[in-house]
Length: 212
Image 1 (cartoon, helix red, strand yellow):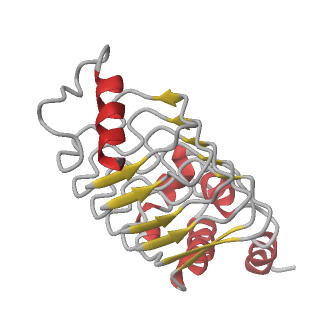
Image 2 (cartoon, one colour):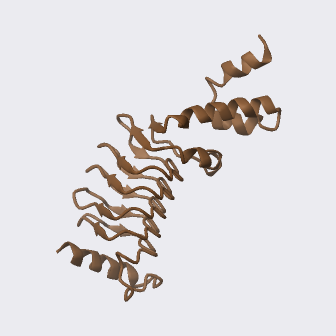
Image 3 (tube, helix red, strand yellow):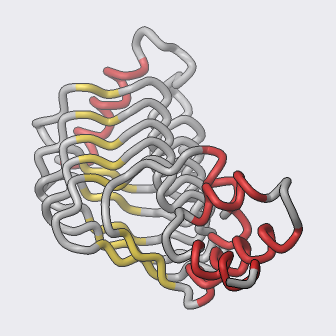
């Protein structure tokens, strides 16, 4: 079998990011074929999730520019979580509908998705990880009141500069530091979010007052 034919056959069986990092120093043809395969995954603008596996920082960085092509995310059935960095840097993603059955959203899952305006959360959701929606600068409203959320990780909505409304359920047990850091349209300036000791209770009390 010719070398190029072998490469094309192999790429159908090996994770493309692993292939890229493993062979990029071997020869330019390996790098070219790996990049072509990655392009195929994003060119349609649809990102498919077959499982809840985390994406490493290295793999996320490989896909950084290509993530900007994503305009739609589809989660297949029976996915237990949205993995870490799953949609990081998807700058043209506008709407996300997270399906029932998902119990957790991993760290930085949607961070820097700067066009994201609407997220539908499932009733099964229990945890939102650190930085999960940080720097989603077009997000204005988040409704968590209908779900059994128990944990909001630190900086989960940090620097969501347009966020004006957030409803939280009574089930919430863990509220991380700096969850709403630099969310000036949601948290008033008289609440010092730099104060690690008291800011959590003050922010929660403020959000509760908005819901009444």
